[in-house]
Length: 176
Image (cartoon, rainbow, N blue to C red; front, top):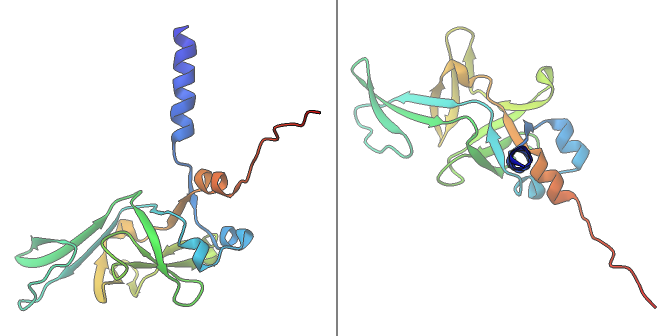
């Protein structure tokens, strides 16, 4: 009896788990998702994304990060942890996607499909110098990103989407 209860609980817990898969151009095309449908999908960050920028002496407003002192200089740091949920705010050119993980629609990162990486939607870089640095734009400011953030891509909960797309009814039968 105890084994049966354990198996039953395991099935319930496993069925409630998210099944995160990479969001790809093929997935988007196969389902015919346009911007309106994509705005209804919950996206997730595949890796932690760490943004930082050095503050000038005249800057006092920190919008969404924390101030840290690094090498005697003030640095604004924003951390978007792995698995953080985000929403689509816009699609500037029909392919790239502005995804917001916090506050409002002006706080977004841009993701786009990379054909050499299976058409997954990866974080798009503003500047990149191999083995030196990489930059992204966030709230109209340039931020450096941590090396582990370079491979961040979008994921979706495919179980939830498939469950929502399936229309099902049970026929009640007919009697005379």
